[in-house]
Every structure is written in structure tokens, then in C-alpha cells.
Length: 106
Image (cartoon, one colour):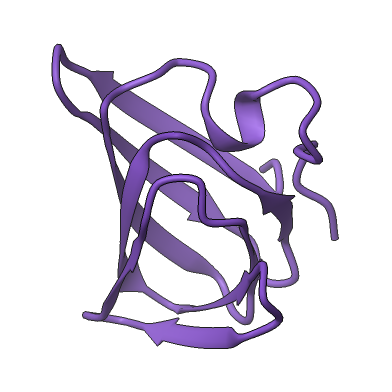
């Protein structure tokens, strides 16, 4: 399995991503125009915000990331996350080219 696997549904006004991350997977700091709500269904994920703050989000918890808020994440344990983006975009966050985004690493 890759460090990060994702399935998406892209609608007219919203995009939903079902994301599986292996423990130790790091998503680099990036920002996007979309608002994002990340709901952790299983595991524990540490979000790092652009101002240096960290937020640990566990099973059954969620975090709201406003538009253009720099953020990254690290899977503290194996995670399943439901990410909701509005407006939708097939090239948002870790998919965007440039802007500090890049592939997930360990």
C-alpha cells in the first residue's frame, strides 16, 4: 500500500475525499482556496498550521481549515480520514503543482 491512498467524489459544489494514511505519512504544508473539513474516522492525525500551531485530531473528531490557511499533516498512527472541500477542485492541496505542495512522505 502507498503511504496515502484516496478515493474521491467530485460534485458541482463540494468534493469528498476518503483518505487512508499509513502511520508516519507526512503531508507537506500547503494551502488552497477551498475550505476543508477533515473528519478522522480512525486513528490520529497531527495537523501543523502555517503559524506553527499543532492540532491533534483523533477518531470521531474534526478540524475546519479556512480558505488559504497553510496546513500540513502527519499520521501519528494509521488513519482513515474523510476530507470535505468546498468549492471542489481536482487539483487542490497535495495535487496542486508548486506552492509548496508535494507528495506525501515518511
